[in-house]
Length: 463
Ligand code: AMP
Ligand code: ZN
Image (cartoon, rainbow, N blue to C red):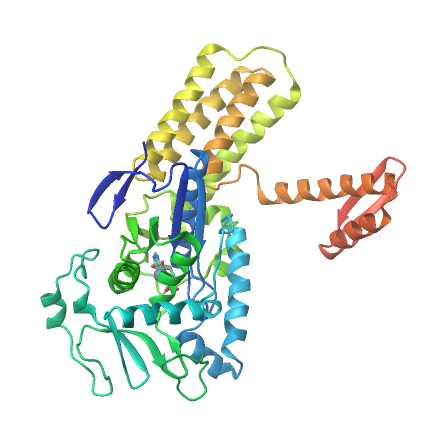
């Protein structure tokens, strides 16, 4: 039984999906005006791991994660560079996808862009106006926060408390200081879309309510993001969705704690960040992934070179053990798997699962991986059969795979991919499919791989 800490209830709850065997999950994605930093990478890695575990347990996961591609920061960056806002967002979406691939994050089932969903946003805003939850004032549409009875239930804030800290700025046309923007009118030079309230663009919160409904339905199982999103973003999403749809929006709300640097939140505004790209120049991004999962997702994690170094060493230990097991499997010594080994391997896997089912405690889960690695190393020294090596390797690979951690060095993975392509080319030539054979040669040559046809077969080298 999987237990999840639900921010909404404030305690751990047994996971019960709405629809048997299925998980509907929405994770708020980044605003794309720059390379993502490693703070942004934390929710990506954490919730990708949640998804992988759910899939391991047999759930079919519909995983939706958006890109916010229209926003003040994107617009100001576009103005700075003198290019359209769409060019900035397209550029950084492409870069973000490269980083995600490096961190071995599975592509989401759906990756909607805010600018492709404007019609849905206009429709939901209109519903909110029709139901009396929103009003228009000179081209701006506001949500009447006080009309939604449950406001504050996620962030545990009450209306009076919120009211005390709020003033209406002179230029604002809202009726109540607590009201928030659903639609704002066009300013000169900004991207805008036609709407019943004049040309303009959506406020930030409405996009997630709309995309979540479109791709997952009115009611979803898990909604997730970093803890800074609890208020106001997620609180406002709940107000919009529940007011418009008349149903509970999400059953479970999961929030990761911050990635800090010198014990302060890493953020663009504090200018204390490292981009994923910068980190990739020094480390394999598998190390970053391992580092992120070495702490429980609800604990703050402080970034340091020392922790990255120890993550690199830990990962190396896993890979070395797996290489040893691969060699032992290839050596082919005959012999059945001893019962004791089978039982021990199963026990480590069980321990791993128990940690994951306790609100995805990846720190304890990885500790179970290390116990198995240590055990495998002892057995390797004693000498084991191919079958035993296979069984141990399979267990380690399963456990690492759920965490999205590869048990091979990236260079090793690349070499294997090259060899797979060469074999495919040979086959294509045998079948006289010269078009495919040439295509593969070009593909490899674009990666700087030179092929040589020799008498002993095809050899390859890096240019
Ligand atoms: P943003 O692009 O700022 O909307 O952030 C995208 C995601 O990254 C959100 O889920 C944020 O909560 C999360 N995030 C931003 N900074 C950090 C950080 N330092 N630690 C953990 N999560 C963060
Ligand atoms: Zn969101």
